[in-house]
Length: 210
Ligand code: SAH
Image 1 (spheres, helix red, strand yellow):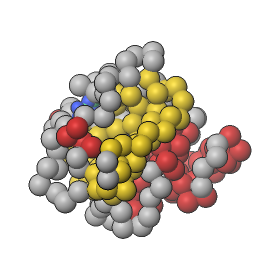
Image 2: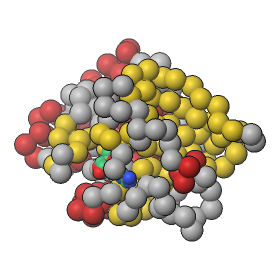
Image 3: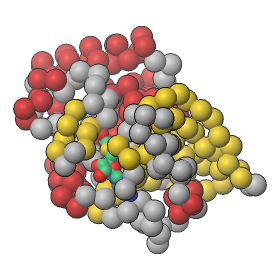
């Protein structure tokens, strides 16, 4: 259920993000559209619209709204873009991306089968047409044509694995936290004809990629 209080809390969150971040109105509209309270465990419902990560079980978390906004914005998405997410977690970030690209073009993989299953059911119930698979991001959706963009919500210690880079078309974007605990950087990679162009977007803290 999306109550008037949820809606008001979400609008306040979006107003804060608009002030604090340099992100597009399209990204903010996507954050405004997704009922984050439906993605957090019941005991955290009253904090669903705080701008902070929250535990979702299995030692994993739902990302903070500002981080979802910044990463989504860096992907420079257009409606219809095919997007690859590594680390579905509860499915919140995938829902935000689906608000921008539309139905049927978000593909997400999650290592923990129970989380993948729960996210698939939740996204379905909320009306998001996102394909969720249990598995390892390094080799998921190998049968699919290349994606327009990809992002990781878990941090590979030594750079984005080649198996993921290979899944993105020339000119496509990859946004990811990279590095070991305590020293991770958020980067945007653009896939060029002869290599990756890398942009640094500051220090971050994500769960390690397994
Ligand atoms: N996208 C989520 C955040 C997920 S947290 C949100 O909307 O808030 C990161 C997730 O990455 C965890 O659920 C973790 O299990 C998953 N993960 C870690 N290593 C992975 C791998 N190699 N392949 C796929 N998922 C992985």
